[in-house]
Amino acid sequence: MSGLVLVVPGLVFLVSELIFWVFGLVLNSSVSFDAEFAMKKLSEKGIGVRPFFYPLHKQPVFQKLDMFNGEKYPVAEQLGQRGFYIPSGLGIADDEINQCASIVIDFFNS
Image (cartoon, rainbow, N blue to C red; front, side, top):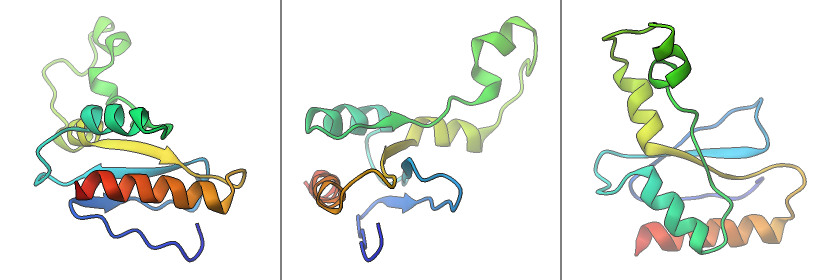
């Protein structure tokens, strides 16, 4: 994604040097919809989206083990509700990156 600058109102971009296969987006609290809605709409436009990982304390396997009972982790919960991934990676051509970026920008500007 070298040289590509995304300016999208209402988003915070997460950057990692270690994960190259996805690019994380987190919706600001000013955005009226959640990640599930954004993923549905972007998926309808052909963008392969993935949700952020579900917070550990909310996963059924840990609840069955009586772990995290009554505990709250608001940052993890917010990321789980407002974060999602769009495609990235070395195997994606520049034109695919540009098309994905254009669709994402158009969606958030509409």
